[in-house]
Image (cartoon, rainbow, N blue to C red; front, side, top):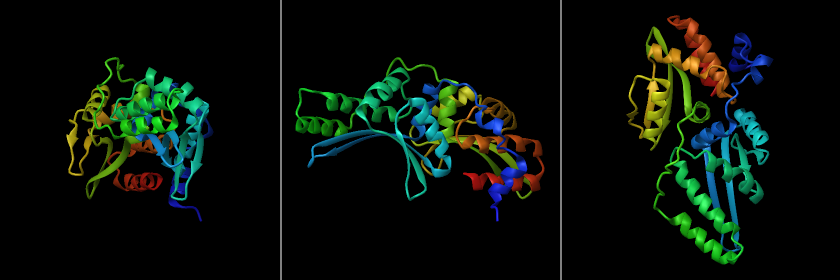
Length: 280
């Protein structure tokens, strides 16, 4: 028997063949940096016993969103996609040549915007030590250990470029939410939101770019939130994200966007709300 999400997708016909490839031609590098700002992780592993140093860049997604990791791998030309037993998929980049030729040049050309930039700076410093041919392996490990334990944040780069649509799309695919929310027993409204733990400034920039009216606010769960159900804002957001995304969130967006035609029809929106929840 088919589950509700499969039935819903068939009913609304959101997975037409032409939709799979019809995505806006964004700047991949900027998009990838946005996605990394949301879900990327720069790791530095030290094994003092075996004197082994391992640097990795990892992006993790639910297994049902594995296809976006394969897209990243194809565009970058490096990395491996693996799935674990916990229902997660990971793009893992760990070879020195790939880091040197693809990863570092990409993030130097298009700097990270969130607090991930501090992790990247330590990663970059550690990479330079890792590559040093004049130091012993033991010396490298001690130097990298000091870098990792350093609590001082580096100064923000002065050459940070203007926030682009490509970056916003990537960041939204990682951190954004297209949802339906109950306002009362007979009313469901469309909403859009992004949350961040520390990066209020990033959300403020997105607010200005998307012309979202509500202010960025601090919620009780300990996060900064950019969120709106304002009808005019929702119309602009629908237009802004049309035909852009490459991950599973594009499916959720299409269901969300097309359901705007059912505004004020509670029974229809209630079914679509449940469908979106099953797809997350």
